[in-house]
Length: 452
Image (tube, rainbow, N blue to C red):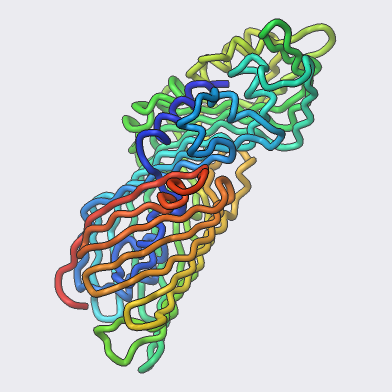
């Protein structure tokens, strides 16, 4: 099931850089309000710090897992064994977000923005450790020669790339001397690039290990095998993601948001309190390509028959996985489509930023996914809750985000902003002082023209 090379990719990224949890953690709620804030909540565009904001570039990358800690990277333990230890399903998330050239401006009570984004996602969702161990390690972690599978959920290997062009507007709806209320919306034109999904739902069966080889028998499961573009040919090759980010226009998404703030009597000091609520990524995109395929199968292995799981060790293509299973004679197609829709990762975001003293702020940020990661034909995301204390001057900020992440647990990091340049990590502190299962890094540059 393509497992080995995915794990190698995860380990390579984890050992060469630090990567981010909720994207742009800490800087996205900065009091210097620009395009980045507008991507979290379009209502913030009515609060732009500058008359014109030019966003040049920003990159945020997330890696999270629930098995491998930072100390494991420096030890002698076989890391492929560690990812499939215990009884809890294995989860990995690699999530890259690029905010490309973008611009925003204020006009009277309105704020407008045009933004460009690119996404790359690689996810392992609730993989049964017994199956992963049998394929990658020949069942080395199994204490018994026979293991019973009783999966009552959908295990997924999922990869996605797509681009986005957003058109946003925010407007002041109500304002007094002390208070301000804004609303906003974004329409996103979606450019699906490449997609791959392997889902194994309600898998029940037996894995038997003999002389280092593992076999699957007495099995029933519902499979979904879907792919489009480069990811059908190579699921774990980085070039398959970077070469296929923007496809043709074939989808629409929308964001909605509201923003409430308590103003300071001195406009130069900004606000005393700023808060927002938004629903993001409502919509879907249709993948179309010459090699497109989305097929649902019934996997049935009965009697004395068995499937040699060693056939999948090192396999790097969903097309090859599908062909091996078809050749085994254990698959029956139940439905098939050449083009298919994939839902965006819809989330609810809520945040509040409070000024304690003139230069010290504390913000709370909550992200709650509204989709079920176990369902096929959708892009996954993560639930997070972040607390960020921040020392803030006009042209300089230092902040330290502390996040509870549903996959990797508790993480803490640090970042700073100097003028329009910012750089940070949501987990570098816990990575260095604790056995963190999360690592991250982000940076970017933007500049403003004129005082709002």
